[in-house]
Image (cartoon, rainbow, N blue to C red; front, top):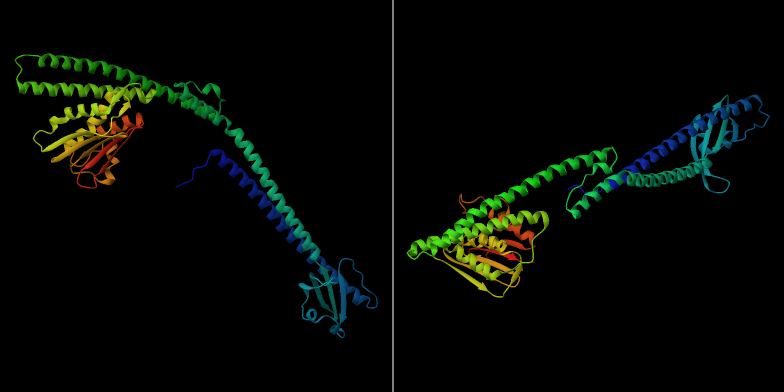
Length: 427
């Protein structure tokens, strides 16, 4: 995975590395050119000097040759044995030799040798001083490289701060929009450059989002009105019919199912509209809801799903617990969890346990795979055995509602027997 770095950090490092690399390349080139030119000059000088020495000895054998920058020795064929043994074996030309100097330290010399007209001529040039100069030059160049590298780093910091300042200001303006709750034009605050172009694009994007949110808000308001009205008519009509004196038990049971379905639809609509508004403005609090009471109502509304199945549903309230949320939100969440448990349990029991920190729905159904526990809360994912019913949206809505109020919802397989455990932990 690629490491994430701030743009300013990348700019500073790139500028510093560029300055350091360019300085190092210049230093290497300078040292290399100096070495080559110096070697060529020393070699050419020694060749000219040894030729001059040989000529002086040949023309004036009785005079001492004169040189200022080198040490010179001459021997004839008859006296060559006086020359150092190592020198006698050297052919004509310039050679590198290392010998002890007058101070007893090993020194590096350039030795020019020429054997011509029976005369052996030797010129020795001490290059140790030049090597010391090279070393001093090397240290100076290295120091200059690091100095220019630090200078490049400082310039990079200054440039990055100056170049990225408009970007930071743009980000700060965007963060301020979160506090005020609405978007304001950005492009007018920035220059007509790349950052200004980005601000203009953000303004256009914000305008499209605002228009879409307004359309969504109007749609939710219309849907709320249009759906609540027929549901209220169904609820009132059902209540009137239940008061009829000639109502048969079978018809009364069907009316109760209609009443429960109408109430569930009303709660679901309220929860969805609340979720739509709260995700824009924050959750609505202030209403205290008894968890056990809502769970009991949900269990009663889901009993018709049992039909002829040998399934028992129990409510176990270990401790009283209340939550700071609308009853419709908790009812929608529990309806999905308890309804799924009853739906998939063919034999056994569904136990709803209310504790101090949350509520658990434990069933003896086919269970779930551990790797599928988290996937079931994703939109469009249905558990095994769901068949073709539903669109896999129920648990996804439960997750959104729980996230809105800071609750933790999860599912896991039972370890003691077949079945699953769905739990909501209240924050």
